[in-house]
Amino acid sequence: MKSNQDISVIIPVFNEEKNLPILLRELRSVLDNLKSSYEIVCINDASTDDSLSELIKAAKKNDKIKIIDFARNFGQTAALSAGIALSSGDIIIPIDGDLQNDPKDIPRLLKEISKGYSVVSGWRKKRKDSFLRVLPSQIANWIITRATRVRLHDNGCSLKAYKREIIEGVPLYGEMHRFISVFAAWSGGRVTEIIVNHRPRRFGKSNYGFSRVFKVILDLLVIRFLHSYMSRPVHFFGKYGFCAFAVGSGFEFWAVILKVVDGRSFIATPLPVVGAMFLIVGAQLVLTGILAELLMRTYYESQGKQPYVVRAIYQWRLNEAKNHCRHDRRDAFSAAQSGRHQSPK
Image 1: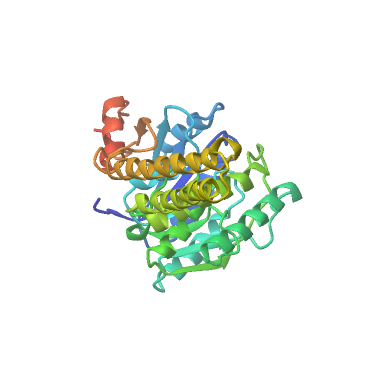
Image 2 (image 1 turned 30 degrees about the vertical axis):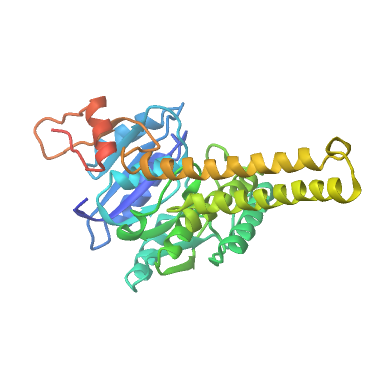
């Protein structure tokens, strides 16, 4: 998609009605002082409060604000994916909608990007969160660093800056948003980190806890698989399938030796049953690898699938005599599938 903005600020929103007016005001104060064109893309992830109303109210006063309204709650990763696909900036800057990230750090992120880095990650060195939020984050960061060898202090910080060309190739499914920097580094991008200001939450409550650690472990298994075997999953499953075949064959051979040498009946030892079990598991793993090959090559790529459904896209043109808001589910869905920006007429 051809870019027509310098900067796209992406804000996933879920029940942040009191925070949004303050955040949007702070963002505009910072972005208006930059010598760059910008847009603010807000993704309403099926908020149950008045977040959408606050966004619409702000968008009617500022045509740089675009609103993407999800049909249901798809999560932060899907929101970021939609924001990236439907934005047009050369530089992508995600920021949380809870006011804990400071928009005043954006110029510092851009300064590092101008030095040639592909990703500039924020590091909340002095976090203003409770111990029960900080501890799971520290455990998750330790696990991610050890498993990926990408050394960042704070993978969970939403405030980052990405060059579009590096982030467009990153697969965003499930809960993969915290691994974008890892994918970028594995893709050959230059990654750095700066200390950013972190503020206490003023309104609302956090949705994170110790469950994050278990999600990180499961997601790490997935990204290691994607990194090493994305284009050849049959090699991953086939490797363990042949190991199972070898173990099963060894048990069966041992049972035959006992029969020939010691005269022991096959029913007197569990070896034939255990060997047969390993042979069956081996066959299942190889077949799973073949199915994974088919799924990897067809589901997302050939069908153009996306992990989200957009209900509507809102954007107002203030310089027109009459402002109209297109609320066409078919057009919004088409925009999500094609990745092209569609403005209301």
